[in-house]
Image (cartoon, rainbow, N blue to C red; front, side, top):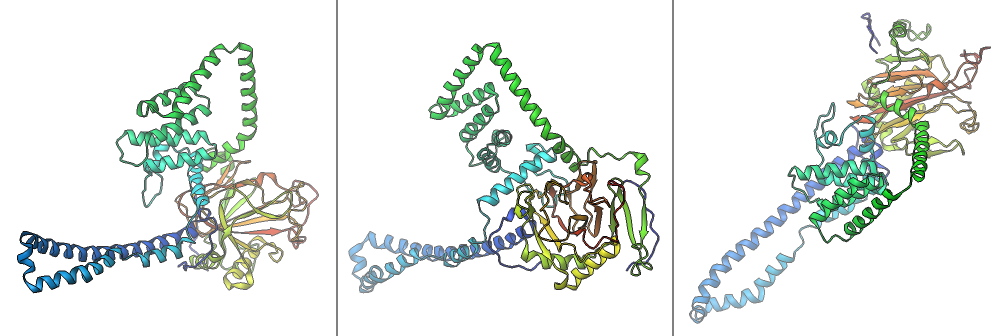
Length: 536
C-alpha cells in the first residue's frame, strides 16, 4: 500500500523430521525440505561406499605391484627361481590360497550399507508425478511472470539466495514433459533453449537429433509448416538416414503442395474457424490475463482519489476489553470490497508452533466439488494443508479468540484453522470462498450456513510472487509475515459479494506459509444483523 503510515509508539502486547508415505511432494515446499535431508543422508552413505571401494582397490593395487615384481624375476629364470624351496612353497600357497582370497576381495560387494540405505529411503522418493508437477510449475511461472526461457534457464530470478541454472539436458526434459501433455507451445520454447545452449558449446548428453525431432513436430502442430521443414532439414544434415525425419519431410512437402492448390473458399472457411476459435479463447482469457497481470504487480485499479480514502489506525475491536489498552495496528488495503490488514497480529513463536503442529499432517489441499459438495483435489490448487482445532493447542485457541475479538464474529461455528504451505509454483486460481446459489449443498454437512467472512494470516515473507489478488476489482495484497487480512464474503443480507473472487498467485521464489479461518453465518445473527437492502 503506497500511502504514509504514522504510528504512535505504544507498547503492544525446527521443523522436526518425520516419516510419511509419498504424497505429492511438489505441492509443498515444507515437505520438500525433508527430501534435502534424505539426499544428504544418501550422499554420506555414498561417500562411505566410495571410501570402502578405494580401500579395496588400494589393497588390490599393492598385491598387483608385489606380484608384478615377483613374476618378473621368476619368468627370467623359472627353474633357478623354483630351485629355491621357499619360492616353490610360496608359489603353491599363492595359487592355492592367496589368489582365492584375492578373488573374494575383488568380488566383495562394498555397497551393502549404501544399497540397504537406498532401499529404505527409496519409498520416500518423489515419483514421476512429482517430476511432472515440478516441471509444470516452472512452465506456469514462466507464463504468469512473463519469463523468457533464457532468463529461467540461467536462474536470473528476483530475490534468489541460491542461484541455479538449467542444463541443456534439463531444458530437453522440460520440453519432453510439455510434449507428453500435448503442450506444443512450451515444447517449442524449451527444445529451442536446449538447442541454443548446445549451439553455444555446452557439453551435454542431450542429442541435437532428438531435440530437433521433438522441436520440428511441435512447430508443425502449431501450424508453422515452413519452420518445421527447416528444422527437419537441419536434423537430416546431422542424420541423413533418420527414418521418421525422412518420412516427415515427404509429408510436409505433400502438405505444402496441397495448401498451394487449396481454393479460396476452403481458405475462407478455415479463416472463419480460426476467428471462432479466437472468440472462444477471448471468452476465457480476460480473467486469466487480469489474474496474471495482478500477480506481476500490474493492472491495479486504485485511483489516487480512492487511495486517499484508505487509512491506517489503531483498532481496539470496537472497545473490546482485551484491546482497549493495547490496540492493534490496522490499515485499509482496499475499499470495495473492504479488505483490511492487521499488522504484527501473530508472533514468530506462534507461527512456529502452528507450523510444527501442521507439518506432520500436511496433505494435498482440497476444494469443494460444486456438483457433489464433497472435498476433492484439484489441479488449480497446488499446495498442501492441514486443519488445527483450538482444543489441541493453547496457541491455536488463543488465535481463534483473537480472530473473534477483532472481527466481532462468533468463531464457535467457524471451520478449524486451515494451515497451507505452497509448493513449487504453488498457487490457487481464481475462486470464491462462499457457496453460490448454484451450489446449495456446498456446506450442508457443516450445518452452519455459508462462509460469511475470511481471515487470512501470512506466516512467511515471500521473496517473489505469491500475492493474493482480486481480479474482479484489480486488487493485489502482498504477503508480509506476521500480518493478516480480513474481508466479508457475504453482504449483511446474506447475498454473496462476487467482487471477493480472489486467487493465490504462484510463488516465484521462496516458501509461502499461510493459515486461514472461514467464519460462517450461524451465530452472527445479532453480531452482524441483516439489512433491508440486498447489497448494502
